[in-house]
Image (cartoon, rainbow, N blue to C red; front, side, top):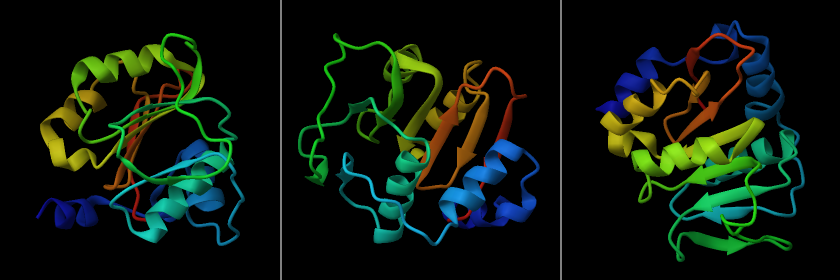
Amino acid sequence: MQYLKFLLKSSNAHGVHSPFVYDLVTKCFYNRKKRKLSNILLPKGFKKKHLEVLNDMLSYFDVQKACFFVEETHFVHTLPNTRLIDLKSSFSEDLVYVSNVNFKLEIIDEAFELLNEKGILIIEHPYKKHSMWEKVKSNVKAQVIVDTYFFGIIFPREIQAKETFCIRL
């Protein structure tokens, strides 16, 4: 039922008026040319097209440093040069990825603290904890929210007005 509601309110690139999000949708999500990315962890339980979108997004934003809030057995496999970053050693991440199991407000607060000024927070399956997802979207640091149903993608872009975009993949 939640997915049906999402489909009814979601749009594609033509419904997006933000240049930043429009470029993300057209040049990354809907781009048929797949990018090669050598350092990504692939989470379990996703369809191939969703893994490709995640892969393309990390490549599109040239993610160099990432932090993953996941349980040990969460990933299908790792590609070469992949590593989980020790939270104590780095405090300026390009990306923070939160699995559904670790989707808690205290983890989200810590994730926002870890992100650099151009960072990306990705929450896996946000609708599995819908009330929590609504709280995260209301966080003052969550400026640009791209809801794809399978991933909640948050950009703490202070230069942009707070907006939420529901995008079909």
